[in-house]
Length: 397
Image (cartoon, rainbow, N blue to C red):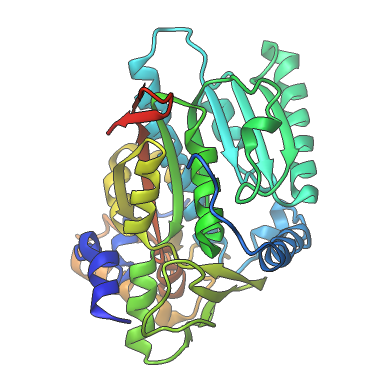
């Protein structure tokens, strides 16, 4: 990877610490529990669109019992906790600036099977737009919403209103599919999916415009995306196009010396999931494209640092979501990883135990932590819009 690419992509990432899962240790005192879209090479894009849609449609819906047996169950719960904290953070920012009783409208872009529906319900939103490329996943999302609504209706009346439609947010203008195209949104969320748009500049612009154009001034676009700088750091460290551990593998199918700004393609394989092509997100380019559509970077934080930042307010939720594994294993439980995957936890207990006070610690196995720290959270704020003499938007960013 060239120095020029590294300097432009990496500048603000030097302080991220992803070398050890020890940062995920939590003490436990209990012994028990754009105006015109650039041209896109349509045949290639459509082929990849079908591939991504097929990939997610074919992921089998698993019950709670089966999911709990996964090798990466705690990492998945940890990622879900990160999402919860991110969503709560920005919903709270919005509520603090609104009058009591004001509407709170959200776009869940690339909503999948509806894993965040409960987060929206608990966040007190009034309307939700759900869209996803995978029609089967979207059907499951709508079914979950109906069950949630029925359960809620029996006790308190209606939960938030919602609309659902399947389409590719990297190719289609979402506003034209809304029941009310003039609707003003307050929050747009895209979790673990935004990177697919960096296949081409046209797709990236389309997705960013979809995130930005209906946002109210001072509304937010929030996302969790792979950290391109961290991925390339590991690739250089490995000295190979392919690298990973026993739960994940990344294999580049593009030039790793000078990765392109768009179309920097790699295969990502995660334990128990068929691999699917993904794309690096060149963050400085993302910031520039967002600014074009009136979105100003508010925050960019790696998962390791966001965990530390959110822990004081989120420790209770972390426990309820079982986002960390108890070490040593308690009662009849069995660790999901190998003994050597918890050397950091053993060291932590040795350094911090005082008598019998701290007998266990909450942590992730080293392989799981290495996957979690491939990601970052980011947030952009919608700037106030003015209009020039030709009727074109000018953003006060």
